[in-house]
Image 1 (spheres, rainbow, N blue to C red):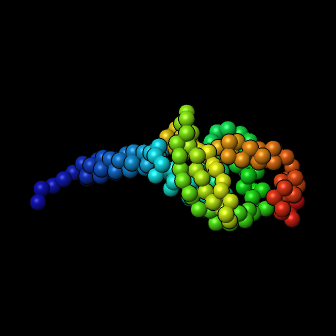
Image 2: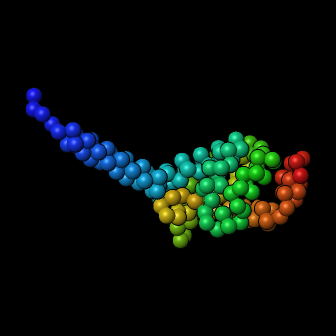
Image 3: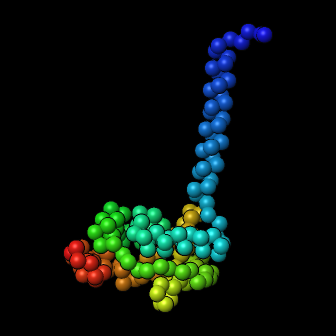
Length: 158
């Protein structure tokens, strides 16, 4: 058996580890940053979004907000208010997804026999929800006090 210098083993081990880390980083970065702009992908995203809201897992809901919606309500405020006044909208069923003009899409869904419409578009390769287009009345609500939010949502915490 040929003698291999310990420094050589360490060097090649490090080269191998760096290679694995770089490949893993590139793969995971690509997967996180890119979602296809298709109706099928938006259906998956919107269905997950509505489920998270329904079960009051609102952190991933806020994380899907587009930039203009994030400007309306800070993440910490959104999470706190929904933790103190959890929503109980009922189960949502995605009915359809349709492309509109200028990169906008509408997702139609049903909650307890009522059809609602959410507006989505892509920002930086990811699907983003527009609170301003989907629920303009909530913009004023999130700009108000917690007591006003609680009253408007039927919560007893305010």
